[in-house]
Image 1 (cartoon, rainbow, N blue to C red):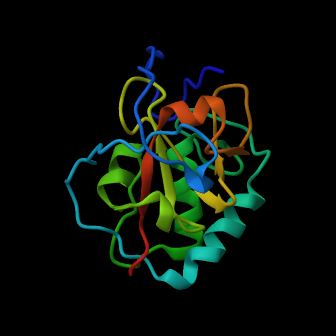
Image 2 (image 1 turned 90 degrees about the vertical axis):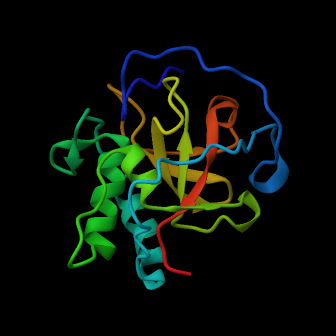
Length: 176
């Protein structure tokens, strides 16, 4: 499976290997210490919106993928899906939400896999860049994302062979 979407440039091979745990301990998914760009303060969204974000993401399953897309009518790329979901359920009145995967990483705080909760963001290296793909964690090692051209928004396992090998970590946008 080649994911050429979201922060897409032409796909480059991703180095395999690494160590670390997995959500639920079911794969060799690594948890590398990859820091996000520290360019803005964390969003600290209202934790009450956590379950609403999961529900909204699930409602968008089967919406077509579109590079640069950020609406149900026009389709979504991965960061457009996340931006739309959080705009609908938790948009802060005085602050713009991030748009790119790197911006989302910079506006969130790292979460240990053992503390991963529904509504947290999961990040992957699908193009040779640490934060080139993302989705919303919905529990039980599953996440919702907009994968690539020709696809639709769908739910996949963080621990799948493809995503487990490219997993870069989880991050949180909700206040503690």
